[in-house]
Image 1: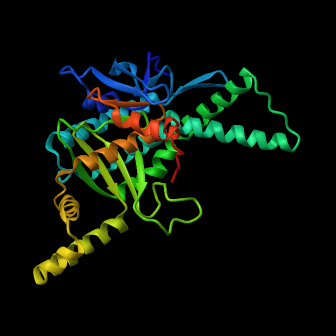
Image 2: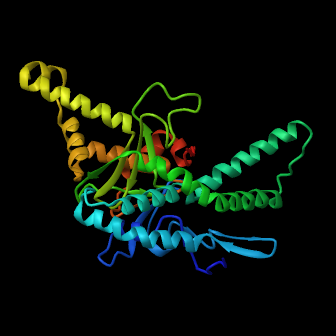
Image 3: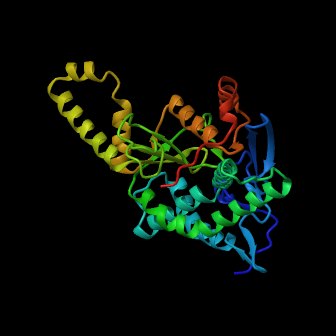
Length: 330
Protein backbone atom coordinates (compact mmCIF):
# COMPACT_ATOMS: atom_id res chain seq x y z
CA UNK A 1 0.00 0.00 0.00
CA UNK A 2 1.51 3.32 -1.02
CA UNK A 3 1.74 6.06 1.56
CA UNK A 4 -0.76 8.88 1.32
CA UNK A 5 1.25 12.10 1.31
CA UNK A 6 -0.80 13.97 3.86
CA UNK A 7 0.62 17.15 5.33
CA UNK A 8 -0.18 15.73 8.77
CA UNK A 9 -1.37 12.40 10.09
CA UNK A 10 -3.36 12.58 13.32
CA UNK A 11 -2.91 10.22 16.26
CA UNK A 12 -6.08 11.58 17.86
CA UNK A 13 -8.78 11.76 15.15
CA UNK A 14 -9.95 15.19 14.10
CA UNK A 15 -13.61 14.22 14.46
CA UNK A 16 -12.93 13.54 18.16
CA UNK A 17 -10.96 16.78 18.64
CA UNK A 18 -13.82 18.76 17.09
CA UNK A 19 -15.97 17.68 20.03
CA UNK A 20 -13.64 19.79 22.21
CA UNK A 21 -13.65 22.86 19.97
CA UNK A 22 -13.88 26.35 21.44
CA UNK A 23 -15.62 27.96 18.45
CA UNK A 24 -18.89 27.32 16.60
CA UNK A 25 -17.16 26.21 13.40
CA UNK A 26 -15.38 23.49 15.45
CA UNK A 27 -12.00 24.37 14.01
CA UNK A 28 -10.17 25.73 17.08
CA UNK A 29 -9.38 24.46 20.56
CA UNK A 30 -7.22 25.42 23.52
CA UNK A 31 -4.05 23.48 24.28
CA UNK A 32 -1.70 23.19 27.23
CA UNK A 33 1.85 21.91 26.80
CA UNK A 34 2.67 20.22 30.09
CA UNK A 35 6.41 20.14 29.35
CA UNK A 36 6.70 23.88 28.81
CA UNK A 37 3.51 25.08 30.60
CA UNK A 38 2.62 27.05 27.47
CA UNK A 39 -1.08 27.70 26.74
CA UNK A 40 -2.16 28.42 23.17
CA UNK A 41 -5.11 28.28 20.81
CA UNK A 42 -4.72 26.18 17.68
CA UNK A 43 -6.49 24.91 14.63
CA UNK A 44 -7.48 21.27 15.13
CA UNK A 45 -5.65 20.35 11.91
CA UNK A 46 -2.37 21.33 13.53
CA UNK A 47 -2.44 19.39 16.81
CA UNK A 48 -2.14 15.72 17.82
CA UNK A 49 -0.46 15.02 14.49
CA UNK A 50 2.92 14.65 12.86
CA UNK A 51 4.09 14.67 9.28
CA UNK A 52 4.04 11.12 7.85
CA UNK A 53 3.55 9.71 11.33
CA UNK A 54 2.37 6.30 10.03
CA UNK A 55 4.64 6.07 6.96
CA UNK A 56 7.73 3.91 6.71
CA UNK A 57 10.11 2.89 3.93
CA UNK A 58 11.72 -0.54 3.97
CA UNK A 59 13.94 -2.04 1.27
CA UNK A 60 13.01 0.76 -1.10
CA UNK A 61 9.25 0.25 -0.69
CA UNK A 62 6.90 2.67 1.02
CA UNK A 63 4.14 1.63 3.38
CA UNK A 64 1.57 3.68 5.27
CA UNK A 65 -0.89 2.54 7.92
CA UNK A 66 -2.67 5.91 7.81
CA UNK A 67 -5.25 4.87 5.16
CA UNK A 68 -6.28 1.92 7.35
CA UNK A 69 -6.73 4.14 10.41
CA UNK A 70 -8.56 6.75 8.34
CA UNK A 71 -10.97 4.09 7.09
CA UNK A 72 -11.52 2.79 10.64
CA UNK A 73 -12.30 6.34 11.76
CA UNK A 74 -14.80 6.81 8.92
CA UNK A 75 -16.62 3.62 9.95
CA UNK A 76 -16.63 4.52 13.63
CA UNK A 77 -17.33 8.27 13.54
CA UNK A 78 -21.10 7.98 12.89
CA UNK A 79 -21.53 5.72 15.93
CA UNK A 80 -19.58 8.03 18.22
CA UNK A 81 -21.44 11.06 16.87
CA UNK A 82 -24.74 9.30 17.61
CA UNK A 83 -23.62 8.49 21.15
CA UNK A 84 -22.59 12.11 21.73
CA UNK A 85 -25.92 13.37 20.36
CA UNK A 86 -28.25 10.88 22.07
CA UNK A 87 -26.18 10.39 25.27
CA UNK A 88 -27.07 6.71 25.45
CA UNK A 89 -25.33 3.39 24.69
CA UNK A 90 -28.49 1.28 24.46
CA UNK A 91 -28.92 1.71 20.70
CA UNK A 92 -25.58 0.12 19.81
CA UNK A 93 -25.71 -3.04 17.71
CA UNK A 94 -23.03 -5.72 17.68
CA UNK A 95 -21.32 -4.25 14.61
CA UNK A 96 -21.18 -0.85 16.33
CA UNK A 97 -19.60 -2.36 19.42
CA UNK A 98 -17.07 -4.37 17.41
CA UNK A 99 -15.99 -1.26 15.48
CA UNK A 100 -15.72 0.73 18.70
CA UNK A 101 -13.56 -2.04 20.14
CA UNK A 102 -11.20 -1.82 17.17
CA UNK A 103 -11.24 1.97 17.33
CA UNK A 104 -10.39 2.06 21.04
CA UNK A 105 -7.61 -0.50 20.61
CA UNK A 106 -6.19 1.53 17.73
CA UNK A 107 -6.39 4.73 19.74
CA UNK A 108 -4.57 3.04 22.61
CA UNK A 109 -1.74 1.83 20.38
CA UNK A 110 -1.38 4.62 17.81
CA UNK A 111 -0.08 7.58 19.85
CA UNK A 112 3.56 8.69 20.22
CA UNK A 113 3.67 7.47 23.82
CA UNK A 114 4.13 3.84 22.78
CA UNK A 115 7.08 4.83 20.57
CA UNK A 116 8.62 6.85 23.39
CA UNK A 117 8.45 3.88 25.73
CA UNK A 118 9.73 1.41 23.12
CA UNK A 119 12.60 3.75 22.29
CA UNK A 120 13.44 4.11 25.97
CA UNK A 121 13.32 0.32 26.38
CA UNK A 122 15.72 -0.18 23.45
CA UNK A 123 18.07 2.44 24.87
CA UNK A 124 18.12 0.68 28.24
CA UNK A 125 18.76 -2.68 26.59
CA UNK A 126 21.69 -1.22 24.68
CA UNK A 127 22.99 0.31 27.89
CA UNK A 128 22.83 -3.16 29.39
CA UNK A 129 24.71 -4.61 26.43
CA UNK A 130 27.30 -1.88 26.95
CA UNK A 131 27.90 -3.25 30.44
CA UNK A 132 28.80 -6.59 28.89
CA UNK A 133 31.06 -5.33 26.14
CA UNK A 134 28.85 -3.30 23.81
CA UNK A 135 29.46 0.40 23.28
CA UNK A 136 26.37 2.26 22.03
CA UNK A 137 27.41 5.74 20.93
CA UNK A 138 25.25 8.65 21.99
CA UNK A 139 25.43 10.32 18.57
CA UNK A 140 22.65 11.92 16.59
CA UNK A 141 22.84 8.97 14.23
CA UNK A 142 22.38 6.57 17.15
CA UNK A 143 19.37 8.48 18.47
CA UNK A 144 17.78 8.62 15.03
CA UNK A 145 18.32 4.88 14.61
CA UNK A 146 16.40 4.19 17.84
CA UNK A 147 13.64 6.58 16.80
CA UNK A 148 13.30 4.98 13.36
CA UNK A 149 13.33 1.50 14.88
CA UNK A 150 10.60 2.36 17.40
CA UNK A 151 8.49 3.93 14.64
CA UNK A 152 8.78 0.94 12.31
CA UNK A 153 8.14 -1.62 15.05
CA UNK A 154 5.02 0.16 16.34
CA UNK A 155 3.57 0.72 12.85
CA UNK A 156 4.13 -2.89 11.82
CA UNK A 157 2.71 -4.02 15.14
CA UNK A 158 -0.47 -1.96 14.93
CA UNK A 159 -2.66 -4.58 13.18
CA UNK A 160 -1.71 -7.20 15.77
CA UNK A 161 -2.22 -4.75 18.63
CA UNK A 162 -5.70 -3.85 17.39
CA UNK A 163 -6.75 -7.49 17.04
CA UNK A 164 -5.26 -8.47 20.40
CA UNK A 165 -6.45 -5.51 22.45
CA UNK A 166 -9.95 -4.87 21.09
CA UNK A 167 -11.51 -7.79 23.07
CA UNK A 168 -10.10 -6.28 26.28
CA UNK A 169 -12.24 -3.19 25.66
CA UNK A 170 -15.32 -5.13 24.58
CA UNK A 171 -15.51 -7.31 27.70
CA UNK A 172 -15.69 -4.25 29.95
CA UNK A 173 -18.94 -2.77 31.25
CA UNK A 174 -19.46 0.52 29.42
CA UNK A 175 -20.94 3.55 31.17
CA UNK A 176 -21.42 7.10 29.89
CA UNK A 177 -20.40 9.91 32.24
CA UNK A 178 -21.82 13.40 31.72
CA UNK A 179 -20.74 16.84 32.86
CA UNK A 180 -22.06 20.38 32.26
CA UNK A 181 -20.95 23.15 29.89
CA UNK A 182 -19.27 25.23 32.58
CA UNK A 183 -17.25 22.24 33.83
CA UNK A 184 -16.01 20.51 30.63
CA UNK A 185 -13.94 17.41 30.12
CA UNK A 186 -10.52 17.81 28.53
CA UNK A 187 -8.69 15.32 26.30
CA UNK A 188 -5.00 14.51 25.97
CA UNK A 189 -2.78 13.58 23.03
CA UNK A 190 -2.69 10.11 24.65
CA UNK A 191 -6.37 9.94 25.66
CA UNK A 192 -6.92 6.37 26.88
CA UNK A 193 -6.45 6.91 30.62
CA UNK A 194 -6.63 4.30 33.37
CA UNK A 195 -6.71 3.80 37.10
CA UNK A 196 -7.40 0.79 39.32
CA UNK A 197 -10.07 0.52 42.00
CA UNK A 198 -8.45 -2.50 43.69
CA UNK A 199 -5.52 -2.26 46.05
CA UNK A 200 -4.48 -5.93 45.89
CA UNK A 201 -4.49 -8.96 43.61
CA UNK A 202 -2.72 -7.49 40.59
CA UNK A 203 0.19 -9.88 40.12
CA UNK A 204 3.84 -9.04 39.42
CA UNK A 205 3.24 -6.44 36.69
CA UNK A 206 1.33 -3.88 38.71
CA UNK A 207 -2.20 -2.55 38.75
CA UNK A 208 -2.41 -0.75 35.39
CA UNK A 209 -3.20 -2.68 32.23
CA UNK A 210 -6.21 -3.28 30.00
CA UNK A 211 -6.75 -6.80 31.31
CA UNK A 212 -5.88 -6.25 34.96
CA UNK A 213 -8.64 -6.95 37.54
CA UNK A 214 -10.24 -3.77 38.86
CA UNK A 215 -9.08 -1.60 35.95
CA UNK A 216 -11.06 1.51 35.08
CA UNK A 217 -10.57 2.92 31.56
CA UNK A 218 -11.65 6.40 30.47
CA UNK A 219 -11.91 7.87 26.97
CA UNK A 220 -13.36 11.40 26.57
CA UNK A 221 -15.83 11.52 23.66
CA UNK A 222 -16.67 15.21 23.93
CA UNK A 223 -16.42 18.12 26.32
CA UNK A 224 -19.63 16.81 27.94
CA UNK A 225 -19.26 13.01 27.71
CA UNK A 226 -16.65 10.44 28.74
CA UNK A 227 -16.84 6.71 28.02
CA UNK A 228 -16.08 4.80 31.23
CA UNK A 229 -15.11 1.13 30.81
CA UNK A 230 -15.22 -0.86 34.02
CA UNK A 231 -13.79 -4.29 34.77
CA UNK A 232 -16.66 -6.79 34.54
CA UNK A 233 -15.90 -8.34 37.92
CA UNK A 234 -15.97 -4.93 39.57
CA UNK A 235 -19.22 -4.04 37.80
CA UNK A 236 -20.87 -7.23 39.02
CA UNK A 237 -19.66 -6.56 42.56
CA UNK A 238 -21.02 -3.02 42.31
CA UNK A 239 -24.44 -4.28 41.26
CA UNK A 240 -24.56 -6.83 44.08
CA UNK A 241 -23.62 -4.11 46.57
CA UNK A 242 -26.35 -1.85 45.19
CA UNK A 243 -28.97 -4.63 45.41
CA UNK A 244 -27.96 -5.47 48.97
CA UNK A 245 -28.00 -1.79 49.95
CA UNK A 246 -31.50 -1.25 48.52
CA UNK A 247 -32.74 -4.36 50.36
CA UNK A 248 -31.27 -3.09 53.62
CA UNK A 249 -32.66 0.39 52.99
CA UNK A 250 -36.20 -0.98 52.59
CA UNK A 251 -35.97 -2.97 55.83
CA UNK A 252 -33.77 -0.81 58.05
CA UNK A 253 -33.29 2.66 56.51
CA UNK A 254 -31.50 4.06 59.55
CA UNK A 255 -28.86 1.32 59.50
CA UNK A 256 -28.46 1.74 55.74
CA UNK A 257 -27.92 5.46 56.26
CA UNK A 258 -25.28 4.81 58.90
CA UNK A 259 -23.43 2.31 56.71
CA UNK A 260 -23.52 4.52 53.61
CA UNK A 261 -24.41 8.15 54.39
CA UNK A 262 -24.20 9.15 50.72
CA UNK A 263 -25.43 6.51 48.31
CA UNK A 264 -25.76 8.86 45.32
CA UNK A 265 -22.69 7.62 43.44
CA UNK A 266 -23.63 3.98 44.00
CA UNK A 267 -27.11 4.68 42.65
CA UNK A 268 -25.89 6.73 39.68
CA UNK A 269 -23.38 4.14 38.51
CA UNK A 270 -25.97 1.39 38.90
CA UNK A 271 -28.40 3.46 36.84
CA UNK A 272 -25.76 3.94 34.15
CA UNK A 273 -25.11 0.21 33.97
CA UNK A 274 -28.80 -0.71 33.82
CA UNK A 275 -30.21 2.01 31.55
CA UNK A 276 -27.06 2.72 29.49
CA UNK A 277 -27.99 6.42 29.68
CA UNK A 278 -25.38 9.04 30.50
CA UNK A 279 -25.14 9.73 34.23
CA UNK A 280 -24.25 13.12 35.64
CA UNK A 281 -21.13 13.29 37.78
CA UNK A 282 -19.92 15.86 40.28
CA UNK A 283 -17.30 18.57 39.83
CA UNK A 284 -14.88 16.53 41.96
CA UNK A 285 -15.35 13.53 39.68
CA UNK A 286 -14.83 15.67 36.56
CA UNK A 287 -11.66 17.03 38.10
CA UNK A 288 -10.41 13.52 38.82
CA UNK A 289 -10.98 12.43 35.20
CA UNK A 290 -9.33 15.57 33.86
CA UNK A 291 -6.36 14.95 36.13
CA UNK A 292 -5.97 11.51 34.54
CA UNK A 293 -5.86 13.14 31.09
CA UNK A 294 -3.08 15.45 32.32
CA UNK A 295 -1.20 12.50 33.79
CA UNK A 296 -1.53 10.36 30.64
CA UNK A 297 -0.72 13.13 28.17
CA UNK A 298 2.56 12.70 26.32
CA UNK A 299 2.81 16.46 25.92
CA UNK A 300 -0.48 18.22 25.15
CA UNK A 301 -3.86 18.54 26.86
CA UNK A 302 -6.78 19.99 24.86
CA UNK A 303 -9.91 21.77 26.04
CA UNK A 304 -12.82 23.88 24.87
CA UNK A 305 -12.01 26.32 27.69
CA UNK A 306 -8.92 28.38 28.34
CA UNK A 307 -8.63 26.97 31.84
CA UNK A 308 -5.70 24.70 32.71
CA UNK A 309 -5.45 25.58 36.38
CA UNK A 310 -5.73 21.92 37.37
CA UNK A 311 -2.84 20.90 35.10
CA UNK A 312 -0.70 23.77 36.32
CA UNK A 313 -1.42 22.88 39.93
CA UNK A 314 -0.56 19.20 39.36
CA UNK A 315 2.80 20.07 37.79
CA UNK A 316 3.61 22.55 40.53
CA UNK A 317 2.90 19.99 43.26
CA UNK A 318 4.76 17.18 41.48
CA UNK A 319 6.96 17.90 38.41
CA UNK A 320 6.78 14.21 37.41
CA UNK A 321 3.46 15.04 35.73
CA UNK A 322 5.44 16.81 33.01
CA UNK A 323 6.41 13.36 31.76
CA UNK A 324 4.18 10.89 29.99
CA UNK A 325 2.88 7.72 31.65
CA UNK A 326 4.28 4.21 31.57
CA UNK A 327 2.06 2.56 28.97
CA UNK A 328 1.27 -1.07 29.71
CA UNK A 329 0.05 -3.22 26.82
CA UNK A 330 -2.47 -5.94 27.66
